[in-house]
Length: 105
Length: 115
Image (cartoon, rainbow over all chains, first blue to last red; front, side, top):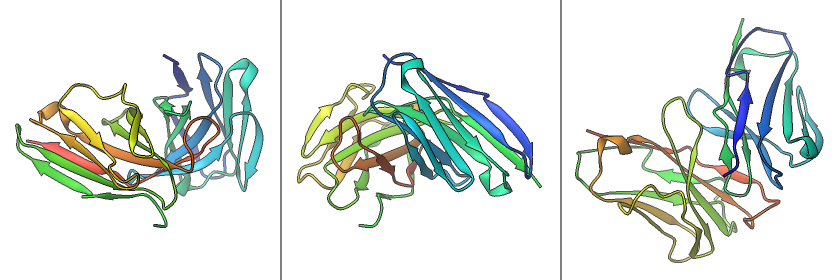
């Protein structure tokens, strides 16, 4: 089956810093979502982005389907951005292992 | 409803017992998914319903796990003869139409602990 790899596994930032999270996948996909799992375990939808670029406030995402990767950009990070960020692909949502982000005040 | 609702939020059961976990999807969503998440891991796909039927149950780990969606709305995940290794957070998601080109939304999960 399709493999999803996320990097880095862990990321520690100071408040106000910018970051880039990466998601690589092993085959072509027609569905890709980014989620933020908050400390209470809730998976929050960030982007539905099988291709192209989208922006929502301080967050933006780009998927280059032909090269099998997607990037999530977080600008001017805040402590509330802390949590685990997941990329998931395909209609059954095959998840990567996530990137654990910690933003310190 | 406004979002995907899962009950109970927490369930503690003894090894060998039977449990049922409930998922109420977003109103009008025809596709429903179940996942299992162990500590430190990403959610793992279990089963996908399109309407009342299981369109893909390839993620169910063994025959102790079963899920139903009799009226195409609420779904129940059933686990027989629970084992300590079944302890995890069970997540449910729904989407408007399923398949490709569809965005899924998750409930808050049920934390199952088998003692």
